[in-house]
Image (cartoon, rainbow, N blue to C red; front, side, top):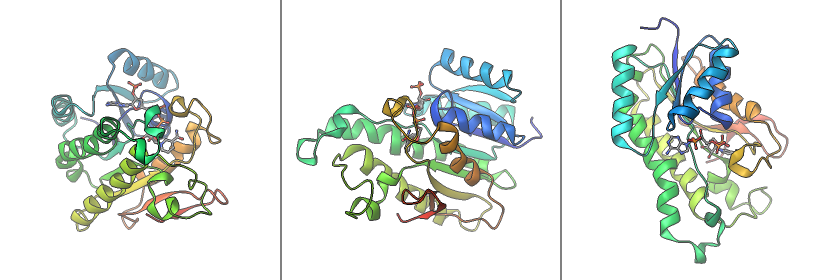
Length: 249
Ligand code: NDP
């Protein structure tokens, strides 16, 4: 059993997830690095521990209910509770950049499996443990491209995007976030979505203008909200001036 706050970051072995794990550990948390590949998970944990973090590997393929159930059972057995869940694992597909009229359902389903359905599977599996924590926090890593308000605003930086799978998956994730927040409103659990901004990771061939560390700061803020902090909102850096605040859904 850990006495320090316990956090789980899905897809914590690289990119924004790795940076989130590093920053949460730097704030004194024990961090479970969720990774679907044991070697990649072990390498990330070794690097985090080299930096002084209390990081531990947790095998977790988020689209596999058996893997998710096994991970939740392991956390229950070893820790009995979970303070922070960061649903960070996410994918984009190159052919998901087609126009709506050219989109295949295969791509939409594949992206939704990870970015939406898996978040529900993982959240439901770990919710009993989050409810046992004094102040459970759920952070769903979303995106400004999931904002229907931004996507329909010709003045927005996301306006030129035309693809269906990834933006619609993040829009669905936003609604998933809002619904969990509503259900859990009278509990100590706060549920919010994070927009990390356009970060240079493998995800986009390192073309982003923010660093993974900068993107992770949004998830870390939402993971460490005070008891009277917000719930059911999308937070991040506004593209216009990079200021931090609530973004429109
Ligand atoms: P990366 O591609 O760098 O990393 C993705 C991580 O998710 C990897 O650890 C990967 O594991 C893991 N992952 C993917 N699918 C699964 C799965 N089925 N089971 C378990 N783990 C999985 O992406 P980023 O760090 O850039 O993105 C992290 C999150 O931030 C995503 O949700 C993304 O949508 C979001 N985001 C990113 C932005 C950006 O500009 N980078 C902008 C806005 C949002 P593995 O190493 O095994 O592949």
